[in-house]
Length: 151
Image (tube, rainbow, N blue to C red; front, side):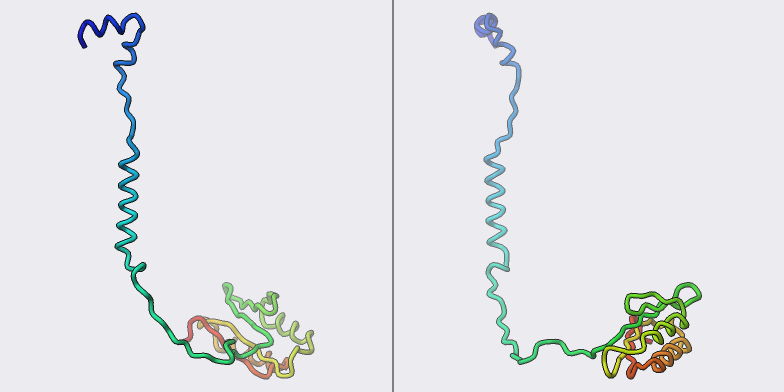
């Protein structure tokens, strides 16, 4: 800066504006790069250009999954040293509580009630056979077994 510039800037105190450097970010080049990256990404994506695969699925009259209907579900779990029975939204501790409940019911909703027993491999065979005997004594005609770990 020469002396003539300082003479003009001094009376108006404009020198304070001259020393500051104003830094701004030019957003236009950044925006251009983002648009170019998006366009290249869209053009390079194979999903846009792949037409897909046409499948001719067989037509059937019934599409509902068929299963075996059960009238009751019994879940057997083990808690420390005792068995816990989950039956019709109730919890029973041991065989006697579950047996007493079944005896108090007296009747089932269907003519041939089916009991689905959910258990795992840790259930002993003696306990399972006791459950089967109690179920048969209380009117269940069929017993189905479901297990997470069949062994």
